[in-house]
Image (cartoon, rainbow, N blue to C red; front, side, top):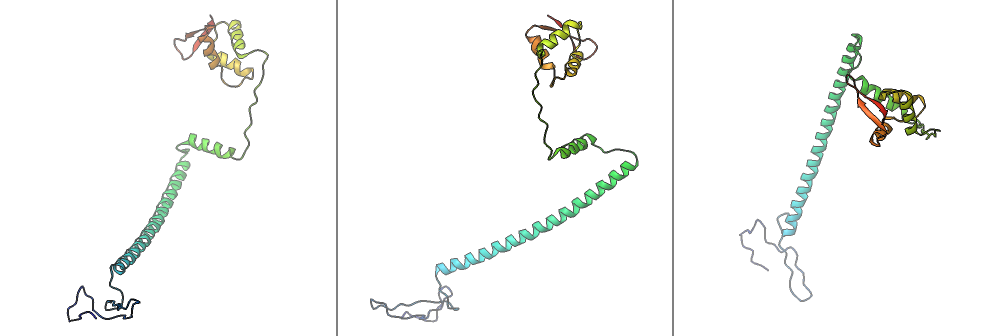
Length: 192
């Protein structure tokens, strides 16, 4: 039995908590705290872990409450802004002013209208005369046409796309000669 005088060490009382005979004949002596728990480092660490776990849970709960509050405030503010925008647009419409960005609104309306509809596949068409030859023939019959006239003829024949790529190709191959217009945009083309 250990010495138990009135001195307390590290706030622990010295008692004989459990005395039993060990198989080799030694007595087991345990020291306990006032509340009866083990005064070991392991129990101290366990207590600290429990405290930190509780603190973590409290912090998480607090953050969740804060996030919910922020979300409620955001919804209220955006609802107010949307309502104000509707009122302003209504007043503008009453004054005869159409929306601020009508192009974007039209584009969005077209996009939403085509959702779910199948797109028409453009079939590749065959023509008796190739595109290059058609352009060369048009330039030969119409003396020195401008690019707009060639494009118009291209479209009137039912051809898809633009003639500009083929015109540029013919110019690079030196089959056509390009002469820029002086006072307006575009070029005049002639056979090379």
